[in-house]
Length: 199
Image 1 (tube, rainbow, N blue to C red):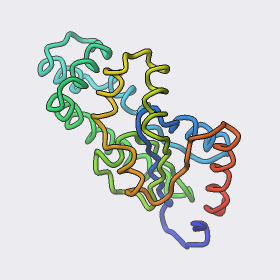
Image 2 (image 1 turned 30 degrees about the vertical axis):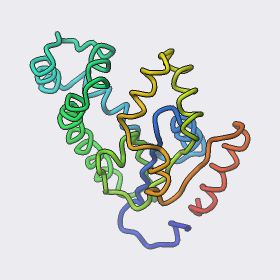
Image 3 (image 1 turned 120 degrees about the vertical axis):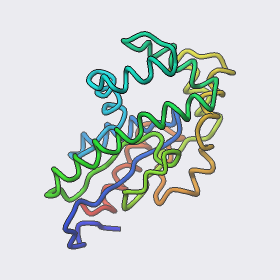
Image 4 (image 1 turned 45 degrees about the vertical axis):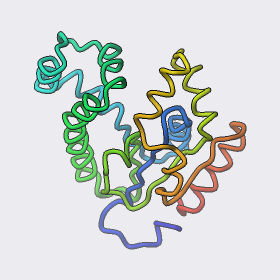
């Protein structure tokens, strides 16, 4: 799978994704620690909330929230209503994609760029050469989300249900890193992936 043997005139783009609470952030952080360039779409979204007044004003009007937007209240609204979630994504995703496009254009000298995007499949983001999924079993995913975000079981399951099921993503991805065991096993899987990249 070595990508560095290919004479690309542009970076090889890897889309890193997972399900909520499957351990994608742990994999992302380890890839960064290994020296790979990772563009975090969640940080882009955070930056947009801080700087994009058009986005804030539109969300304020459509969701009847004051600026600055109360993110916890907004999350509760959209996770309980698929139509509201879809609308919010329609407002945010194009802006995130534009930011990613600019980053890639400005870094054409790089061999590899990893785009960390939780909703890679849900958003139909297809400007990648390889999709990398971080997988854990649905039961592990639920337990981790309850513990991480201090949610009730029903609230945690509702958030999971707003994404494509992790077992379906398993068959959509080009490469899978399994996060069902210890951190040492996870780190070993990450190292094997890096070696297959040829970096």
